[in-house]
Image (cartoon, rainbow, N blue to C red):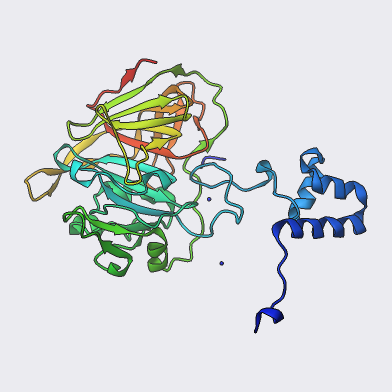
Length: 366
């Protein structure tokens, strides 16, 4: 597994302001330990590491980033309260043109894009450290979902139903089922949008509905501030899944992020933000036709997620070429460079593109 997310006014007790609390804490430290430590409490950047750690342990200063835990699915420093004690939450979100703009993709830790029927794609939107009050539009599950999510442990899975051949695989994969059919109170319909592209949910509602006591997942990726291995500078990549899902990721030097578009049109969310990511992992996969047929007569794709295949990792304006490896569905997928070195990602949000092997990866110039 790789190394490495609330009497009367005169009788109320008076509450210290944040500054007052700091001053009171400093005074206590000064009385007990002397003026030198009090000085470091006021100027923590000048304190030796062991002194800052001690002051942080009693709440007088903020812990240094290096001393704080990191979110398992982003590698970023966790919120002040620490990594939330909850499992990962995956929500199935639609990506047809009628479903756009979607909600909350930029609040996820990881987003996985998978091929579905008729040349369309859908997203598995995964949260753990972060959360959102509106995610969607939520749609149905596919066989790819439990196969991918199994590596996250007892992940909570929110989706809008599916055929029996799909839903029957949810529990055996170790997922906690929080689908719309059984947990309707956790979902809402937005009457300003046309059905079926109008089903939404809240992350906290699904965590509550799941009633899971599982803790945080293990990391899916290895993170580092820099990649020292071989890489090529690129302006971006073009991933032509289909005319309906013509994906481009372009590096923005000002944003220090990969910006997503459909063709020449920016992929914009409900809040007006363009979809962005710190990393884009392109996992080239074998896709075949299953026996499951949709209402339009299109076969549902069957995506092979074990074995190995080509991989491309985008980070820091550069492209790393390598391969992915996963011996079994219970294993975490590894991404390694051509020399066998495990590829590290930049701390931040990651998009995983499950790209059919017949679709080319076009590199865009800088």
